[in-house]
Image (tube, rainbow, N blue to C red; front, side):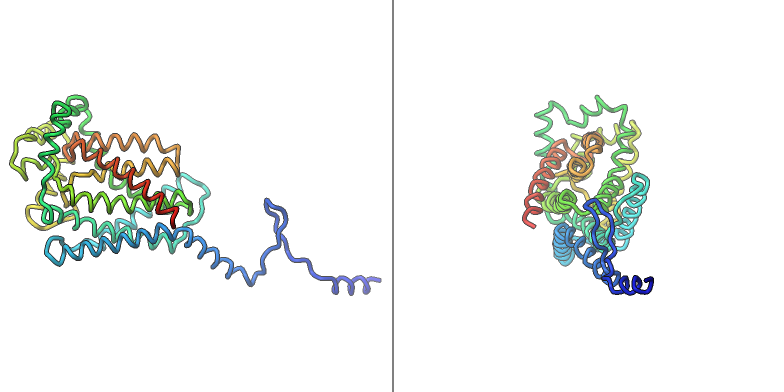
Length: 349
């Protein structure tokens, strides 16, 4: 009897292993197929990130060609490629650390995608600096005096003077906050890069890349201007003669030190990591507004904080003399236009 039962069990077809899911029991894949399935899933994840990676690659190539032309004619210096690649890696590490602190469980990053993004971000940033440095050599500063005159007529006084009257007591914290912009935007950028693939992520990253190129290079060249802090050094005027004295009295030493370094770099013809003078449009305000837009679709709880940060950066850009009020307005309107265009690009890709 027992032998007969054993024979029947051996002849019966073996039941395929199953796994319980939210949709019920499903058959587990053959162990031999698991590596192939893993590779297929990895390719699918890369494919979901492909649209913004393609745009980033295209813009990086465009930046390289732009720089190469300016370098050949002697306008742009060599880029600090390895330095900016190292900065890019540090930004990634900080973003990974922040995600580990905020989330106990999170989707592991797709390392081929992240690696490609880190390389292109580092290359793009290294090319941006010499292109920005070359702006006055290609298109001399021409917009400062029309902007200053128009704003003086509109507000009845220079906007920085009005902010000095209202917020002069906060010059030091605003100076320090303004100095946080570069690490803050880098951290936000890499947090978005590390996020799982989604339409919102693709939209945000396409807008980021196009924003830097369209506003920070194309518009900055067409609307070449230096900003109030450099007015007396470049044009020899007295309209902003009291600005540096007020900043010194208020203790805004970071703005003064950085502007001195930027001027020394421009005057000597030897660019350093602190180089490149350009006011219109304000890329500080534009990318801060991008952070608010990205938070609105990817992290809504952070959106009010991002909007407040954008407002403070705009205020600081004017109060510290880096920008005219119009520069920030152009930055906000420009990045909104880029954001809308990026939505069209995402839908087409």
